[in-house]
Each structure stands twice: as structure tokens, then as C-alpha cells.
Amino acid sequence: MNQVSNPVITSLLVEELHVKSLIPKPTAMGTPLRYSSAFSCGRQQGYAALDVDPTEPMDTAGAWATGLGTIVHEALQDAISRRFPSAQFEVPSMIGDFLSGSCDALIDIYDVGTNYGGTHVLYELKTMGTYGFDKQVGWNRLRGTVSAPQGASAKAVAQAGMNAIGIELGNPDIRIETLVMGSIGFEALSINKANNMGVSGVNRFLAEFEVPRSEWEPLAQGEIRRMEGFAFTIDTGFLPERWAQDDDNKFMKLDPNGRAWQCDYCSYRSLCQDDGDGVIKISNSALTKRKAK
Image (cartoon, rainbow, N blue to C red; front, side):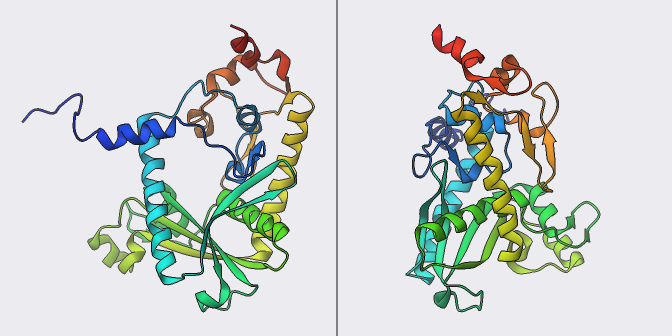
């Protein structure tokens, strides 16, 4: 048996997903910043707001992960619509004139049949690899142990919370008290380990967390203020500094010459390296010099 070095058939889907990943996605309502950039690097958000072409476009592995996520999102939305016909999907909203996005699903509270409070529940789904999923549910697959679940990441909650705030701003009759955060892992826990760890059914590969307003609103409001600062910096002719927040809601200074995963997956890494540290005047940025060539 010979392994093919350049797959001809098996790679066809990822090739299509990779092509789609290279097409720029506009923000939901034409704003410079988007909810989905919650907790990400200010410099990265500045480049994106200026419609800078990526210097490191997403590779095929990244396109595969995001493409599978999109496929699962769309299939789940179809399933939600069959169970809750009044559900709305990809509902766009805006905060100020600088920030916008769309939620995965907005469901009438009476359709859900659970006392979440308010008028609607906002649902957000994240698909993820083994490490991210296990962290959320408190698993150690190697040791076969279970600890207290950490729940959905602060970044995901902040993103969903901004969606909720934006929807409420545009629709005074809507009140969202609870976010429902869904997580689907790409690898199910094995049957043997599941039995030993007391895990059963769909819990082997998916989880769902309810987040009350008292938890999500402070995260969302804090991120709105941070991104408003980025928007002001960009409007005044500068690129923001390389500050981001991690999954534990802690601020971190990024260095594109370092080993932070945020920089490993950044589409503007080499451009950021050329521009250097600190707040950079847009007219002095390497992106200006590249456009001039």
C-alpha cells in the first residue's frame, strides 16, 4: 500500500473550503469592527478594519476546521427551525457605529419552554478540537478523570453578550436574560473511558451551558469599551497596540516574534512584525508602503 503524497480525491472538499476561506467577509452592518473579534488583538482588529489583505492567509488546515464548523452550524440551525419554527438565525445588530455582528439563533422564550426569563434566549454554538472541549467540561482524557467544568470561554460569552446587547438596542421589545452556549467537540470520548468517567449519551461529544445576564453582561460591556477604544484609535489615524485577552479574561501583550498561539494564527503576522511595537501611525505603517508599490 502506498500513501499518496498529493491526494487527488480526498482533498476536494478541503480545497473548496480553502477557496471560500480566502473570500473576505464583510461585517454584519458595515462597521469597522465585529463581535466575533472579541478578546482578539487590537492591532489585528486595526488591520481588519482597514481592509488590509492578509499577509498570511488561512491555510488548508484552518479552512478545514472553520469549514466544518460552518457546516455544523448550518445543519443545527435547520434542526432548530424544525423544533422552534419561530426561531430567527444570523440576526444582525449593531452597537454604535463601530461594532456589529449576528447571532446563531434567537428563540422566543415561550417556544423553548424553559424559564430563562426575558422574552428571548440567544443561542451561540462553538465547534472545537479535543483540548478546547475538554477544558470546558473538565475532562482529562489521558488520566480518565473529571473535574469541575470551566464552561464556555469568556471570549465566546463576550461575543454572544455583545450580540444580545446589540439586538436589544435595535429592538426595545426584546429582553435577553440568558445566553445558551453550545459546544461540540470533533472527537467523541471513547465508550470505555466514558463508562469509567460516568459520561453518557451525547455528553461524550457535546455540552451546553446557561449563562445568566449577571455573568455575561459585564464581560460584554467591558469588551465593548475596549473595542470602542480601538475604533477611536483607528479613526484618529493610528493602529492599536498588540493587546488581547486570553480565555481566562486576562489581558496579555502580544509579540509576533514570540510563541503566543494568537500570533501563530494571525493573518497579519509578518506585517505586524514590520510595523513594530506600540501605537503605530497608519501613514507610517508597512501596509502603506506595500500599497504604494
